[in-house]
Amino acid sequence: MRRWWIDESTILATSNPSDDDLSALRAEGFGVAVSLLDASHQRPGYDPRSAASSGWMLYTIPIDQRAATPTLVQACEFAALLGAVCNVTKSLVFCKDGVARSAFMGAVYWIAKGVPVNTAIARVTTSANVETAWGRSSEEVLRSFEKLGWRIPS
Image (tube, rainbow, N blue to C red):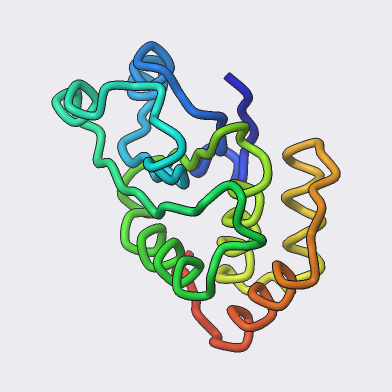
């Protein structure tokens, strides 16, 4: 499983996890899993019933892998969710490969923490150790999100 920290020790981005991956992460104190998979095209690598029974709070913000970029509404949904749980438990965010959609939402997180768009993009691409292709539409959504002034409490 590919993994990288969005925010060290609190928010982890990964590729699509297995049951064993979730079990190990649960033992490390993780309690919230946010899937960015579009279930009509990509299935989770774990059994949702088993994950829920082992204490995971499961959320899905379905983003089609073929879409140019997540929407502003999806960015707001993600920020609201993390804002609600960030002081309660560690969170896991994942997509198929743990890169594009997860990195986008990682940037959303940092913008909601008050980091400027360009710095947020640089931070997640460095953390993920990839050169994510940030298209014009992705940057426009991130800039629109920044203008909303949404904040996740520290």
